Image (cartoon, rainbow, N blue to C red; front, side, top):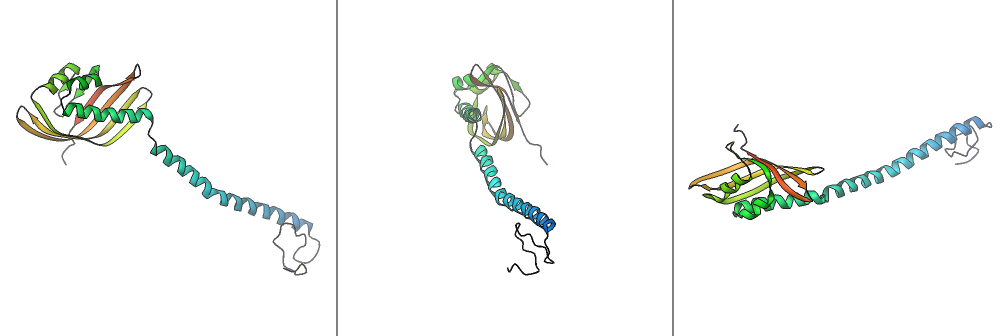
Length: 188
């Protein structure tokens, strides 16, 4: 661009107005407009970078499960396997002394009652967890999910597709099940 043109140079340091006169007032206007444009461009340049960084931290946080949540996930699997394989000592070690277990039919058991139920005429062929979600609150973990169990009690077959809620409490550095509730979804 030729400096003798009557057009305004977009450069923030050009001090000549459109009509060719000394335009110090125009110089300040152009300077501050250019500064604003530069700031917007700088902001627009760094905005995608900030979005990427925030996304990375979010994904990283989701990908790495907290140690207590991972421990609860392992305990849930151990609880289901011990129940299915009728490992009474393992089941007993996972249950708190004052635990309450509510079954699909509405019956409730304490620790001793559930161990007796598990040791009775029960055969579990399938016991599967699904859609497990763990919510931690200091020394309490609330687990929700789906549960499928198929087997026979006293020779009578059953096949349950349940929703479950398990509540674990950490006491003395050890997680134990304090409540477990199984319910059948309502039929439409």
